[in-house]
Image (tube, rainbow, N blue to C red; front, side, top):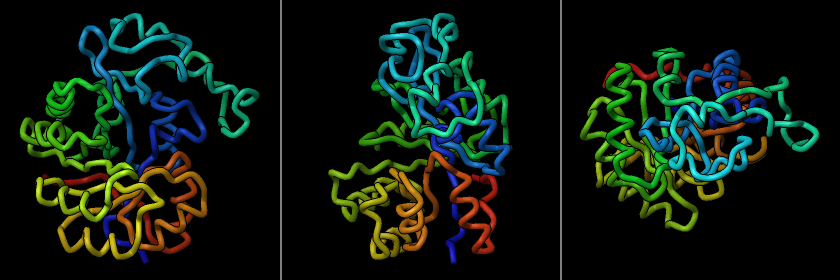
Length: 265
């Protein structure tokens, strides 16, 4: 029923149940049996790769301002779990009280989980040098074959990451404003390994076109079980999702296990 590979990617960890981009969220995903995670990277002022989605600290920590305005020590002092209060966020089914969770770095994530996981690392810092920094971090960890680098409108930066570490793979994230057919053709021509399309733009024709170009095609923006099922039914190679257990249950009912971590270059 599903293509091979079919990737269940825990979006910022199991972020429907634990505060996003924290060790708790990634650990929970692995406890669910999910072996692929997505995360986001920014530079701190002292050039560490900090895992944070937004361009400011305001939403998901008790701090304010841009991560690049603070050294890692100051960022580590922030609480990245107290915002996840079920009384303030009734739409989020937190699994526990996560007050006191801290921001973490990419090297800490890779050291904690090693080759147990496949990593989808989105470039969020606007500085192009973040691409080479991610590649070097992955080289140091020996996890190039377990890593995809992703980003919106960052094809050149993704290719710089691949040039610095040819073992990793690159997957542009395609915004809804772009023509998806043109975007997947560009992804193939530019030398990427896949493309990730918004769930509302994915069709069976687009999936076929991507496969014909030798690309994996995945989707993002999955917000409920209905959109998850729609994406799975048109044959995508997987999706990022805040509730990875939903998709895990779906594939298991269909008799297919989640994909294993990547092997080889």
